Amino acid sequence: MTTATTEAGIISETRVPLRTKLGYGFGDMGNSLILNLKSIYMLYFWTDVFGISAAVAGTIFLFVRIWDGINDPMMGYIADHTRSRWGRYRPYLFFGALPLGIVAVLTFTVPEMSNAGKIAWAAATYTILGMAATVTGVPYNAMFK
Image 1 (cartoon, one colour):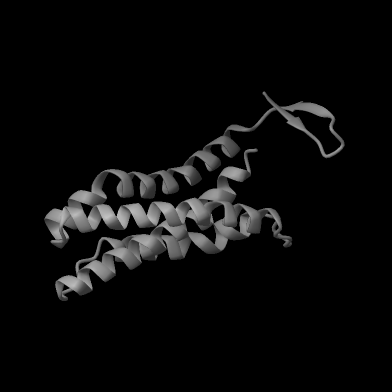
Image 2 (image 1 turned 60 degrees about the vertical axis):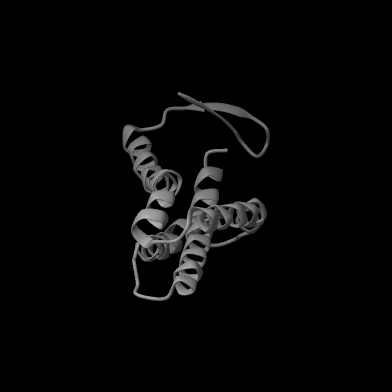
């Protein structure tokens, strides 16, 4: 049983069907997979597979995390003020999933280029991956609040 508060402030209890729980669980699995790849595998990939230095990788992490600290609340504001026929948050899930998948593949692609090109590629794809994850993750998590 879950407890929900209606717009009028009335508290009601409803049962959430197993199908709905599984649907939300599988939806969160995709965002969790991206988060875990970024958290666990990214540094190894950049230094040992892609060939950039750990200092550069750490600097990219720093600046992208700072940008995420700005970007995430912005996405929350945008999603909260969205009005569409699908609701506030669902359009971001519908239209954000495919770009997120494409950028995730590009982030772990190793193009042949100079060291400066590799650094630019790593920074750009990692930044865009974080933003794409924000576009789907923030609205997805807001659906539970």
